Image 1 (tube, rainbow over the protein chains, first blue to last red):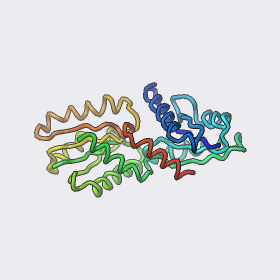
Image 2 (cartoon, chains in turn red, yellow):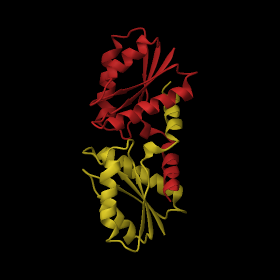
Image 3 (tube, rainbow over the protein chains, first blue to last red):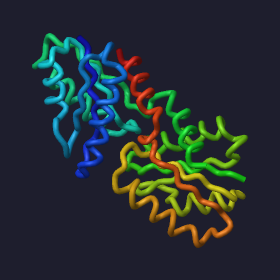
Image 4 (tube, rainbow over the protein chains, first blue to last red):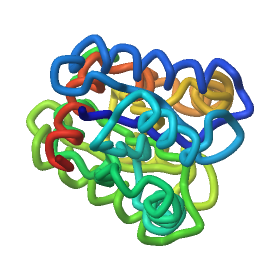
Length: 122
Length: 122
């Protein structure tokens, strides 16, 4: 059973973290056939942590987890912090295949999305 | 003449700021008919600042500038900081219409983009 774990930075602003949870819920509604488990997790400042998020997916029955970093730039968090945290959990979950996706700023759709935003402002 | 100003947070990592500049160049190549001027600017930690970015668009001949916040969540920067900075420049550029777009996390395309990212990781 496949799971998606949407990983955001986390904020002191509760509303900002809730936006991430709402996005995960929308992802679930859209993708539940392919990904029967969709959760969110945070690098810092909010709960659950990335290790807790991965463990909760496994407890829910995931045999494969795709980690999606909700980050725009390939900064330290994307390049080092998230891969290190994900790797540190692999040994605890030997029966689960954990795949780390690239950050969303790397998507070829980003340009199209920006053009859509420009159109909605104009 | 219309301009697009892509506004990112700014990073201590030069490469992260360069990614924003590259994205602005791609936007220009895609949209130069509609937006003959496309620039990037940064809220902090990198140059040009948002006021400098707006002034450079005006100096290049812009009569209308669409500001696109390259931010995922509706945090303080999106809700308060960027609008305040943009408003503070309006008086200096009375001949230029400045429109502030919503942050990219508000796009209905974000869900589709995340699904694309999940597909590319799986």
